[in-house]
Length: 508
Ligand SMILES: NC(=O)C1=CN([C@@H]2O[C@H](COP(=O)(O)OP(=O)(O)OC[C@H]3O[C@@H](n4cnc5c(N)ncnc54)[C@H](O)[C@@H]3O)[C@@H](O)[C@H]2O)[C@@H](O)CC1
Ligand SMILES: Nc1ncnc2c1ncn2[C@@H]1O[C@H](COP(=O)(O)OP(=O)(O)O)[C@@H](O)[C@H]1O
Image 1 (cartoon, rainbow, N blue to C red):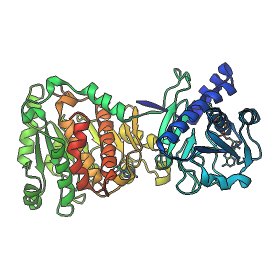
Image 2 (cartoon, rainbow, N blue to C red):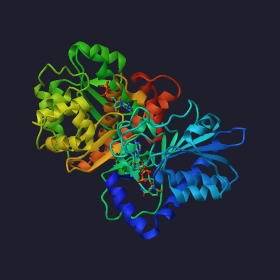
Image 3 (cartoon, rainbow, N blue to C red):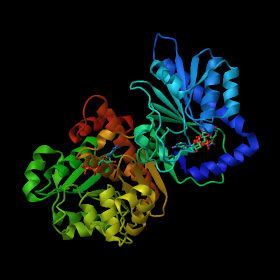
Image 4 (cartoon, helix red, strand yellow):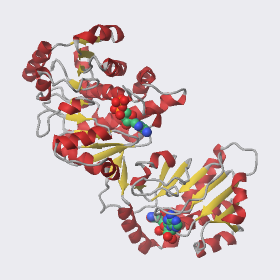
């Protein structure tokens, strides 16, 4: 997992490091990482033309990094040019670049050269950016490598101004900054590399942790137990799905299909009688579940929870439920059960707040999170939520005593004790109707798989494990979005078609 820090935390550690190692030596170290990424990008370009790297240089240390990086490229016989975007630039770095044979021009004199560049290094603003004057633009199609932070992106909030310089890659120094991962960050940074400057963060608690592919794989490996891997379908995992309505028959089918595509042992579906025939045809693997059977399964599970044969291992509640209809007695009983559950969509209208025996994941998008908070007596505006999403997700996690996954371009996953994880840079194409239902199917499947939850013989799933499995499901969902977008437009059914292949890639 990659720790994520605030600008203030990074500034504090940077100040200590500067006093120990000197500002110029840090800048040169940062520049070496920047230059080696530039060289790697040029090598990927397969151009037959000689390489030509142009850097846009700002007034602070970000510009200094850019100049030292150009000096390194000059030494490697790569032709370069620095374009000065402000009256002042770092004098020592400028002298070092010129000593290496480099040329510095005012932006207004040299901007015509941007179109000839094989690569542009954006070294205008980094950590010191504040929203304000426009950022110079780069001709369409020219590749951009951002130094530390794309210029025009707030490194703390992730809010970008319209003229932000969108990058193909960002090399960020010392630590991952929150703003690279939030709000507009994922749309403008491209691929991020954290360059290790050997900073000592030992006395600083990260705000949150980013789950990337390696972390998702490690978490899954850590939680997987060969002992509980199912030998028959009941052991493999039985998921109870409570979903669907005359108004929204599709959501129940999408969630059911996603769980089946993941390889669930058995899917039991509680849907209105009117859509049961549809379900039988579209998801023939599913077995109907009525109110009586839910009650029977719950009482059986309570008696057997320490044994090997709880009838339903986990629940997925909410996709396509008619929010106008009050919950039936059976659903209320499920909420009172000790089996893990994922609760989405209209299930969020009825999930009880306060302490509960059931380990739960709530999966709201922003509007649903505000509704959940409102039900708990906390009224916030959309702006307040977007300014500090983790804070408000924490409120909900505490109020509902549940893991809360706030869905969006960046997903935040928070446990009731306030611990948090995040998943970023998934795929904007996931913003399509029904993709949330697919996520509910994936997570429902994972919670029903006792080789992951460890519920065979255990009474409950700890919140930490619920949070980590939820982050893995969100990561896999994002990856599924990327895989699906790679060869066509994205819709929920195409996501489901690709699920078996993607789940296999993650060891299922
Ligand atoms: N944080 C670290 O540990 C390290 C930081 N280094 C570099 O230092 C950078 C931070 O340096 P600085 O603090 O000098 O900050 P920046 O280089 O980001 O820029 C600050 C300057 O830009 C001006 N400015 C900011 N936004 C503006 C706007 N919208 N319009 C006009 N002017 C604007 C400010 O007035 C100030 O003069 C980092 O981003 C990174 O590139 C590296 O050299 C080494 C390690
Ligand atoms: N811009 C985006 N980039 C990446 N993922 C997104 C983006 N917008 C939405 N998502 C993801 O798509 C899914 C949408 O879920 P949801 O809002 O419940 O939609 P629906 O109810 O239509 O299925 C969530 O997993 C969310 O994280």
